[in-house]
Amino acid sequence: MIAHIVLFKLKEPTSENVALVKEKLLSMEGRVPMLRKLEVGVDVIRSERSYDVALYTHFDSLEDLQAYQVHPYHADDVVPVMKANCAAIVAADYEL
Image (cartoon, rainbow, N blue to C red; front, top):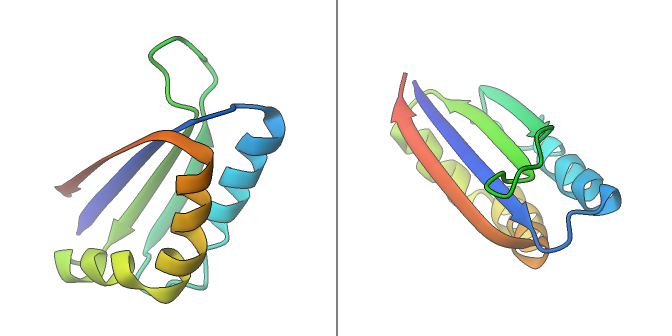
């Protein structure tokens, strides 16, 4: 199993933008079949080094993670919203 964690630092971390990003990430549930686990969290510390939103997902295999990256809903609907609203995006992927 592969864990895929992504952190998003918003250009403008207003409550409305945080809600928009969180809702868009959660909208992948049921639309991207290779997702085995999907969690989205909003930072509660809000320190200088904090990112605003975290995505935590699981996939059965590295191949499923790669298929997720190009899945039409993820690539065409989710990624553009993230790129439009984020100043920085970082990720880590590892085997569970």
